[in-house]
Length: 181
Length: 141
Image (tube, rainbow over all chains, first blue to last red; front, side):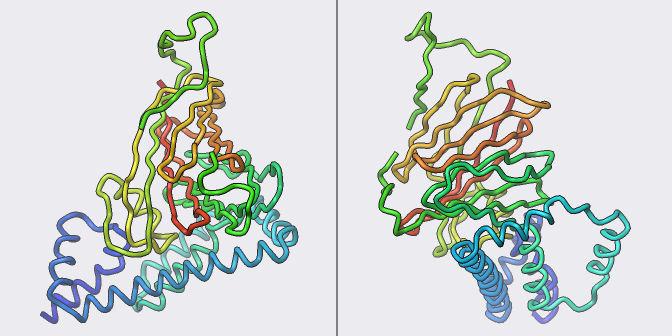
């Protein structure tokens, strides 16, 4: 059982991220069903990720309400900043790959860092049409976002070349109800 | 639920318009995401795997899926399960990418360019706290 716990522990992060093949997924799920300790470890991982994601989203939403223009001015120059060189990226990847100790906390911290880098908050409140910096991707280029009475965030999943735009309707905006078309 | 085309061919208003090479095929999947439960619809498993890096939703349920052919310049409304209408407009192609405008309700719209076969995700948190994700995949014909 202990060996199984060790094997499962090594696979747990990739299982949580949905990166395991079917057979490995089945192995982890079978073990989790019988092992409260590993199930608890998975739960801790879920809670930590959730906490980080919620904190980032809340922080960005608060920033939007407080000082939208200042925040955007701070972000915009970085969108045009040159990407790190190939060797710099390889160095980061190698350090991550050869890292010996990978605890849940370390994973959570890494996830927070990645999320902070890829989540580009585009915060538009009560504005008619706002042109945003064009973010290059083989998959999708966002040209403009129109938003009124809601806050918008753009997430860029670089690895998957996927853009996600999330609109948060303002609960106190009376002008467009849920049934409005 | 069916797609309704607002556009009309002036010469033959009631006749179905034959598809042309300029048209694009658009699939729209509507996913209801919640932070409770553990249900993952296998049809949206890939999307769930991507979004789990960003959001702490525990449950992803496909509640609507439709495919439509969009001619250039014609606004195509799609009724959503959350009582809004999404209006899709194909605005032509540029640098081998499909230009789309996606309008949700009256106040929110996104204009984007998408590689053929690419998927764009748009999420919305409604006033009542419910979360929906639209997965829009456009393919050149």
